Length: 546
Ligand code: GLU
Image (tube, rainbow, N blue to C red; front, side, top):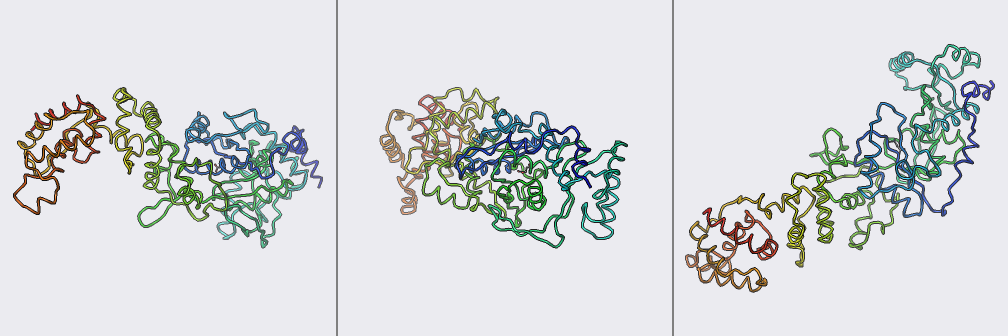
């Protein structure tokens, strides 16, 4: 059979050869250790944690090795395309600090463009033509119905599913039979002519999983669909080769088709990249660990973190811990270092499920927010309010006040770490703002209304907002002594009946007046943030309500 003639028959318009593309897309001039990686999402409009997880690994490996990080859009599945999805993807990843060196909307004129598969048809045509000419691919004219029948027959015969052996009807068509079908305009796909040994295996080194022994591929997988667009398998081989990708870091779901990919690289005479199959992100759900699900777990979507107002650094920092087993130890030794200082390695990536735990993310987030300067925290918070809580924006008009609020509890020996994310912060600081303030609890049981009023009156008499903490506290002690409240709670047990209550209960009254709850930050600091007028008003308000 003259395979060259067959290839001409099938691809009369494809003029450029793979050799031409080898010249057009030369090997990159980069340092020897440099890694070229890529993120290759489909533009479905749904951007999930897995995308960020993959992106972070790819980005770190490329940039820490002076390599290149590419965004390639895998848009050959028309059904999955969503308008605006690429813009959303790029902006969302940029929000999390993931920036590409090449790719659509990043650097679309990069030397390896186009970066969108739907614009790379010619290249796939040239590769398919090459395979046909080398007896490594062939046209298949089977209709959907015929394929469905064959599938049914395999089910009945308990045979493996696929297009192979006796089921591969078009594998050995003569050139005249092909000509005949072409003249009838029967649509065709191009299939790989798999030459694997059904009992054979091969061994490949995975950058994460180590040496893997897998069965050889015997299935004549579709490479080009009847519309001329490639399947994932084919596009992956062609694009990763001609974009000169060195490391293919992708999800575990692609592991089972690795034998097809290895075979394709061999038939196309391309050197193999290093494959790194990441593990799934899991969630603890009661007793079981399961894959995060789009339907059940809102936290799978990156929009979840943006809309709740998680700081992007917190999400990244936490993902680094999930991604690389030695990251946490590094962080303990380098608490203030930028995460780019960590040497990321594929060998330290897990291969048997990575647990994603929101409560751990929250802990990381508390540390990250506590480490931000008050100015940076204010800016981050206000940006989030602008995007996600617009209606309440005016509440935070007084930026100086917001800053004073964020200072509360910051400069203790043990700085407060109770701010987690934008929405939670709005709830946490709501009481500082008069329009949101409400008294939500009652007085401590030891103090009745009349006593509380008496205490508020006495407190207002001596209160001076400019008192330092010590002076203020001495006044509170004096007030307790005058009104017969113990200066220590345990004194009450020592001499029952002697005191009306203790100092903690006295300050609880003032705390209730200022914060609306008994559980509030340090009273003196609260007052400093609120300012005299607001403090007096609130004390009077509680007084009047009693
Ligand atoms: N489009 C594929 C996906 O989103 C890409 C897999 C790969 O990275 O090769 O799963």
